[in-house]
Image (cartoon, rainbow, N blue to C red):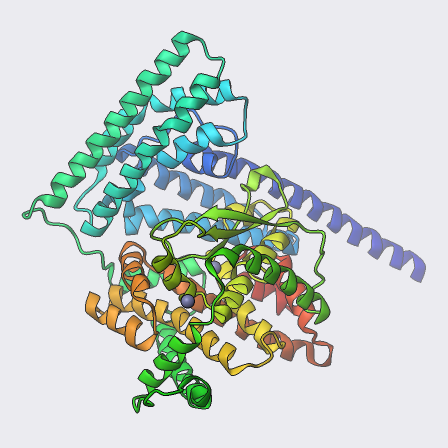
Length: 579
Ligand code: ZN
Ligand code: ZN
């Protein structure tokens, strides 16, 4: 009898399992349908993600289009809510939450933030056109035909864009002018060469050329219209400051956090003061070694600056950047295996490649991932090729990226930062987490990695490394202060420049760039600090939960196994009783 009872309990359990598997399967179909519908409505994302479909016509950004998008997202939110959340697998529950959050974010961006009305830089066909003929989705002839079809709509596209704009900001208008001027270069020699090399018929080539000319005219007319606004002293631009209310809404929706923006701002101020105290101690300790023949400044910030300047003279030669970063990446891979920080699959490809440095950029290295639909597992570690840079400019870049900063940069961009996290993300088979990638989780992870590596002995506790790390994290905290300060507290440009120069010890070239970036974006500069704060808090709470069974490696493996999902959702899974 007992056996029979057990058996029927088992059968009942299996029946529930089978039903749940069915529900998961149906949810997987739902995701495919949802994404297909999204890319159809947003061809620019289809192209960007390498979807391979809906490439032959841009979305025409008129009033009707944005109204339709609102309805579209509301309907999909309703359909999502018909899915029985509780019966989904743990991983699908995370995906469900990501989808729900993302659809609501899109709806909010159009319905409340209305960025399409005030950011002229959201209109630009350059990148789409570039991908249409360079992406690997079809033979060259087919790609050029697609481009040709697409370009027919360029005039209509830019006309609708101008109509939709309603008192844009001056900052975004100027950015749109220079970015659309950049778009014109997409139709240059490389494209002409492709057309000449192709087997298109003379008629097809002719048609394509006419449409390219038409698109260039449309772009130039758009630029001219924006320029006339920008030079009209009576034009009433709106302020780039979105204000505390919208900022906080954007903050909570985009980052997916229970913190308010103000709470994170306050934490950033506290952090900045702590770093300053730590730096003052280190600078005093290092003074005998670096202060040779100098008068020791009495002001603490000036003392810190003097030591930073001296340490910054220790940097690699212009010609050795690539080899140094390449070997650092290898050393970090060895280090994380030796210290048992990850179950790192050393076969996972992290490809190191040279990238030409853009003239205005100060990034020495960056991480890059293949489009989600290309299903590649590779991550790219890009190293700037500065060999041809004028020596004076290179020198300033090298001082900023001195021997110590360069190591932190490799941790952040490479291992165990962005590249390693990207490798784990591709192991999570759910494409939702790649297309709706949570930026604050990715940036938070990279920032968390810096600290974690130093905690585990990278840099051998050298005071130089510690001081430079403090400088690095000052930038992360000041990103929050600048972003929140400009948008919510009415900081002036001068306030920002002074803060970054005097209290974050940033180089002159960085100051202007950071200010520009902060006026052209909202909340993005808060990703790093907020994400890292949430990950560190989660690590503490997870440690308490696991007690004696806690292992750092185990924390990392579990954390990364959910893919690039908001930390809040990962937290719910990792701290749930079921685990
Ligand atoms: Zn030098
Ligand atoms: Zn980053």
